[in-house]
Length: 189
Length: 189
Image (cartoon, rainbow over all chains, first blue to last red; front, side, top):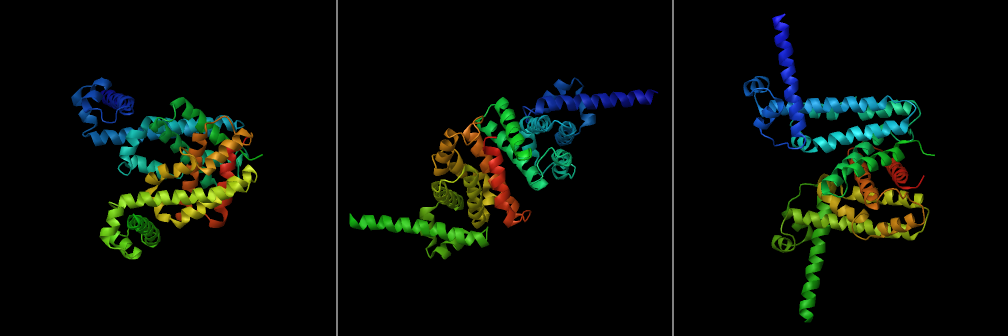
């Protein structure tokens, strides 16, 4: 019993630290460990018991961010009968990752196992989404699926780039990305 | 006076000779050195360095050269005054052709994009003039800024060149698929 309680405590602290890191690092990838400790509400000793180095923490945060994004994007794929809504959901979930996590992810490119695995995964949310939508006849099938996936990635990256340049506001980026993807992914008339 | 003018003509001819030589050498050897490029141009290294302080500067000039070539091709296509669908498909074909003749530029796409944006974005080009006019005729979607439309067009065009270079796409299909993609993104529906 006591052991269970200790484990539950440890899991709770682990989650508090990760959640705090996600809140802070999205906006400030260089935040100090002390900032993160303060935000999480756990003690410094507890913090270091869970994450010995900044690198350990960044890896756990990256894995968690990718997992959340994948869950959201995967959920978008299951709205059958509403292809426009599904495309908008997918578009928003991809932009969330890029806009909130762009700085952190960019610094982790090629460094993070979690990030690299997610990038190469065969069951990427976009691919799952395209496959399901095409099977239901809701998305275009006159182009290779992998090309459509490339188009989705390219449009999202363009939006992130335009926001970074100050050429687009975030709300405009969400609207334009979704509208463009709806135009490209629906079957041609 | 006459001597000065002829000196300037010589300098311009040398500069062009270096750019042409770089385009040829880098096609087969993307990591070629300035010395190899100078040898191909039939010029001394000192002369080459007088025109281009380093490899980066030379590559930037090459990117501008490619953008000029695309401008020239698109001016010819636009002058044919075909339907917007045919025009976009022809532009797609021309961009792929030019892109494949300078494959090493794909590796530099971070630098190449701003220059290629000229073709589609911030400066006046034959293609941009065409888009403005086509939009006034009601042939293009009017719910998005042209800057966004041209940015995603440039993005997917460069992405397609990348797919071709990686061998993930058949050359014969590429222009058609890219053309259809540009049409879907751009044309009113």
